[in-house]
Image 1 (cartoon, rainbow, N blue to C red):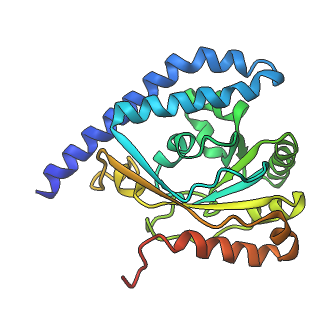
Image 2 (image 1 turned 180 degrees about the horizontal axis):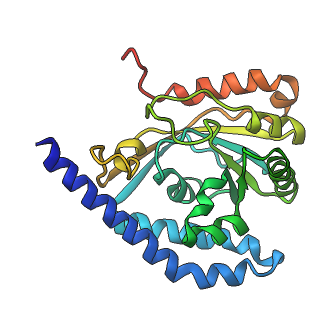
Length: 248
């Protein structure tokens, strides 16, 4: 039975991959035009929302948000757990109220279809090179000053023991302190089983409901008053509250 389910899971992963690739190819020319001039870049965000919703419809993913805030003044940093590739493209449907960029590992640039799209629109981070990592930090500060929110997965990647949180890295909280912007923590509760890592052949992938919990906003005043270690621990605790615990 386990291998029959694994076969069905992998068929679904293949279908998701085809939908993702096909829609990205169709939208690619529009994004390239919008990314050709800096003043047009802001118009990519509504296109991303539209693309995300099309993918969700075709893949039968519904979302349910709890306590999603709408009156937070931008810019700020969005911190979320990272359990699935689903986290990235579904985020545009989850929180369309403020335009945002992703700050993520440069390893994603190894995929030709995504390379230019991610590099020109978002902020890749090469942690193996201190100079390039510092340039990414400067780029993120510039984006915040231009009014963009920044989405960061503080775990630094998808942890091996999903859905349990891996320890958080410090970058998101150092960035918040340096620019004195707030932090919005949120938790993806279900994505780890709706679409597991494609390389994990026996793990689940299926259509369904993606529940997202928004947690209490950490204001710029709170960020200024606390150390980045305290902010890191507070954000970790908030996100972890909605997840299964290892002793459950």
